[in-house]
Image 1 (cartoon, one colour):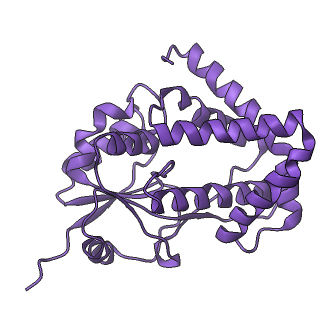
Image 2 (cartoon, rainbow, N blue to C red; image 1 turned 180 degrees about the vertical axis):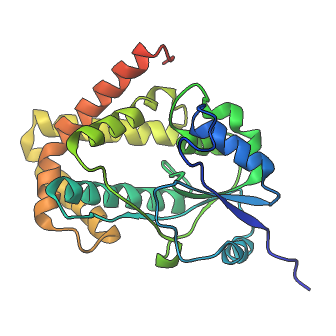
Length: 266
């Protein structure tokens, strides 16, 4: 007779409600601490959750051999369909495909706390690795901690498991978000994450220094985008490709500057 599936509880760190003004990581710590389950299923408070239920997730975890972390897919809804939203949707498709493919190969370089399942005990053990002094990065620092400790990381990819996120409404909020993400990059120590980041930076610098590189770079990146979102337009992909080097370097420089100003270590 087979054992019962592990228990799962969704936890949502609602901003400004249950964080005691101490940030998302502390909210997650509080919620994980009181969850009387084997696993916690983390979601952001602004996502449209996937169709699968907590009990259904428990059965899936059992089928996968009860991994310590299960990376789940996300998709971005372009909302009103403005150009800035469509560009974000195209970029997000590439990010998600890279997330899923790298995890499948056993060399995960990304995950998102907007839709992520982890063994509760292992998450609590990792809290000190999450850099509580930084305002973001609960997911990437968690991934880094799990990889360093040799914990089992799995990935599942289907429409039923996909949560939906919304794009930033304007350029200012987009840059602010991406600079916040970039600001934690100096704290990454995982080899796969650092190599992936370095390769992306190098490829975009090469595009600036030698524009014909785009003839090789774009087909590879467009194929990645179309694997994740077949509705992505060629126009949006080309425009994103042309703008991306400046956009990426601006966000990276802004993120590192903000981190230095806040006194964080590199």
